[in-house]
Length: 418
Image (tube, rainbow, N blue to C red; front, top):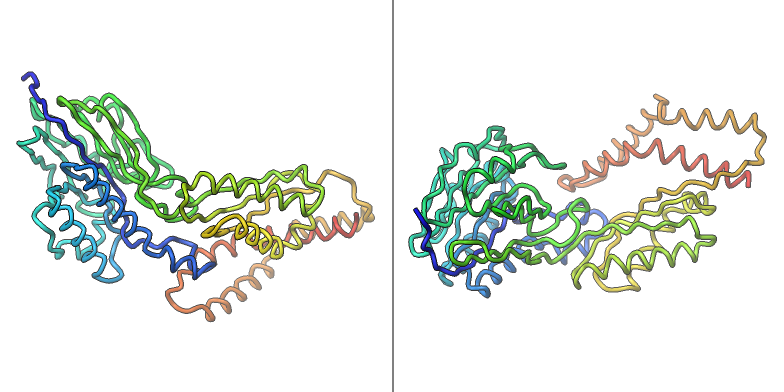
């Protein structure tokens, strides 16, 4: 059947809202900043609602993981329901599927949503036709968290004469950092005959193909240092039954960034500080005026290696001061010292140096040192309040302590021998 569609309309494709998901690693190091941006996921979702209304979108697609597993309390669901009501009042429908995190939540089924919200079935693929637009939306919710079947293989054939959209939560061919749920291939999706594939699950925006469009919009709000850069949703415009424009719209309120600082040319602490300032300023310039958490990584062969390693706490404080002098709402998430000493000969007696070197290199394999570290961590654990989300911190300390102890010892030898 030949197409006769002449309707012009727009819709928003969003995914991975993860409402009320905490910004990981922020609260333990900067409680004040955490308080200011603690509702970042809600603010980003409000920006999505405002965008849909401003652009007069006909509908919003949510390709899974509106929620972040079980809610800490029911207010998360109430917040979502209230925003769905705002869209209803603006004449905007919502079509959504449940993703792996949603499937963990046993309260979603009890949530009373307005009649503009359509949650597609988890039992089998479902199709919804919007007659006035000439649109068919096909999709299936996750029935449980771990879905390893190719869900897209069971999606219906496209409806002839309509603009067909596939709504799918998937890792596609696999993406780093994401479980390989509902696997499929770009070729499979492309050959299915739909006009637009609205994907979710992968938190980095990615346009896999443009004919037809197969899109991961990314998540609305970055939640940790692994989710850097602009986050938001995709605005899609359709004209005469074909996609005429696909645009990323930034909706996040807080960003994460890496600042890489090559200090190999630095011959003084002041030079290190200036290089660091420049790198942080570059990160701020790409944040579009948003609050920013920066991980600073100092690297390169450097004559100041030993001095920085021994004085790492003071160096962190200096870098935090530099950030505060650049702009408000900048937080130094972490300072990574990945420098190495210049390759010079030490003046320490070679016999003594060799023995020290062997002893130091064995720190990571010394059972008594490991036992001592575990005892100290157990003592520290008793002093941290329950629910402080410290497991990642403990894991990081346990993994890095031997290497840090070795590097500090070597730095002290180098400094003493220089």
